[in-house]
Image (cartoon, rainbow, N blue to C red; front, side, top):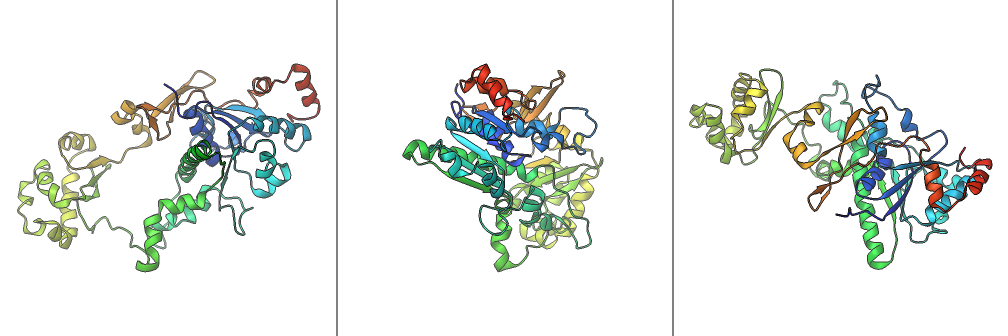
Length: 401
């Protein structure tokens, strides 16, 4: 069964996670993605933090955005390196970049430069702040351009004297990469249907704003939406409750009157059904603090594992707050192929998350681990029809750094 991007050729000149992760999605869905790196490599290759500080496994910052690709090193500051890039782009369908406009101009890789050798090229720009305005040449990681500037950090931080909530690693980068992949599909569809190509822009700022769209749209009319108070919710059975072993369960029973009686019976508290404070949604709202206090006491009586058994037959929606390690063992993750297994260079098996697309019942799957820097120089150049003598000539001219 063919994957939707089979036969699509992608050239990527991008660093870090946001745009490269879009290339990984396209590769998972069948595209041939050539990652063109400077001789020093994508700076992401050297990024380390708490997720990989002790070399105990493959580097997630390298593997997640770069698996399934081929790596070529080119020094684009040399005429020979740029000439080889143009030969690559001449037969490509899509060009992905995260480089800022000033750098694209300096390297001669902007839209007009590449369209001169390939008028059908879909040109995709990922940026922090957008393609217009005074910040077009300002760098922008997702923590700044999306997490902070969209209002997310403000929304999630409590009182003014609380410490800020740290953004999960690559949180908006990965949402933005998914957006880019979808936009590439739209652009290719339009080109196939009309012959008209596209310049696609996706920014982290816009990605963050889209995720917080309800709050942003309401703000001019309603002011700032109050932060939720777990102890006084509008609906006590759309709320979080701590278990005996310190874990959290999220009840998501939005149709409160439909599920209240059943929940009381499942919790073995039938007397709560007739409690006048909790007879219906309006009463539970009026007495929300009392209702939460009762439910807090009930959920604190058992561990999460015990509650899994008790709530197994409950028809309302609920879920435990899982750790990232526990996600690996979720039955739905296994059954739907949401994790793909790869093998590191030293033979260690590891998993990466599949992109959130499935076609004809088949999950998108990573094919290979992230390539070593320049691992495919010879292979890609042979694909351009270059003989060994020509490659040596380019090497002598500094094309590869």
